[in-house]
View 1 (spheres, rainbow, N blue to C red):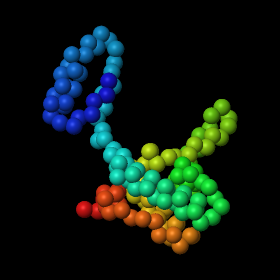
View 2: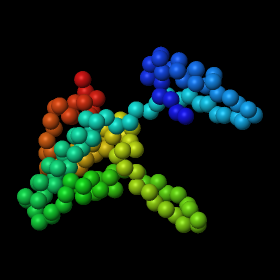
View 3: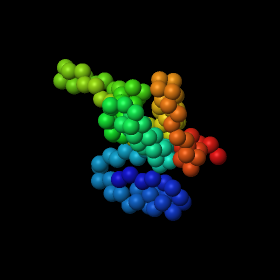
Length: 139
């Protein structure tokens, strides 16, 4: 059982649930940790606005017909770390995706994409305030 303690009512219900547990010689592990906030919806929305823009730009101005999904893979591979595990004597490389990022990590990812577009392609990508300010934590 996992509880996310968002308010006093849920906290009290969790305590009561634990008190009702019948141990019968079976040990249980109870741990409490602060919930790590992951990416914001605004960050994800901004990312896909940018990826759609980049895809359309290249489709209209070059012979590259790549989709927003293709550009997502490109930037994830370019800017996000990879995890390497050894399984059965083989090294397995796992690509980290944006859904695994913290809010700060996602902001950094967005800034890398924005900077890359500007410096590599002289492409200013749109910055819609309704997404950008929320995505970057600007009030």
